[in-house]
Length: 357
Ligand SMILES: Cc1ncc(COP(=O)(O)O)c(C=O)c1O
Image (cartoon, rainbow, N blue to C red; front, side, top):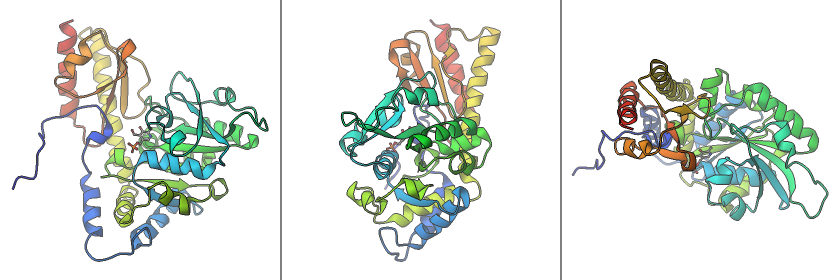
């Protein structure tokens, strides 16, 4: 029987989770297979995961594996807030734009979005919504959520994260980080994970795995135990408690061992740089016209505007998404298995389509 149904030659830049499973992760799943283990997180893999997480984030850090990033965000944020709490985030935040209203409808959490030029909050931008404590008419801004790397492919520096933490903590607020692409940030900054999380004042983290070579799974990582309560119950209540948790934990252990998280994300970032570099070279020598970059490329995504119609013709060969169709802005994402040949073929196809405009 043929089990493989898909065409291996179909490659694209739509999302880093179009890629498959990293072979080292697949090995980890196989190694965790066979035999019996206690379900719902009482297994040896989940116990080991907590040791590994402590090595990366500090002795107080505690990991709560979940199925997906939306679950990590919604459950993690619930654990940080009372019923009357609200979250200040960017208007481009995944929790605001891409979670189908789950923070509001499942979590019961009011979001207070703020416009940004580059997907990054600053103390000044946070202040646009961080006010009104004690006013019974206003949802109380008690958490700030930042995304690292951002939805626009940019990365917060350590100083930028710390400035936010130092600003919001005295206001009685805590800091959440959506780290769906945290490994890409570590690779981009060239820093250990704890430098721009625990040590920079982040209280609760959604640690991403799926976009960096896992089959599925992420972890809520509590960095400051005083900032979160009830996760022991909230995961199940939100349908995020995996019975066969050993397989999520085994993947997360593999990702955080022997620098796999860095090797995978570093490669994805390097491929985005290759794409940007090739396009910049083409723009400089005149062979590419009409492409303008709309964001810095600091991780594994390239954002650009194209002449009208080019994106649709190019999509006949490579999948990718419009980011803001009203201004012909597109997003190209690279993953751990994007190859140099993928980039070179894509640049050649784009160059052909632009020449035909
Ligand atoms: C910034 C960000 N956060 C969270 C997620 C996780 O989403 P999912 O629930 O699809 O795993 C994503 C995935 O697109 C994302 O880009």
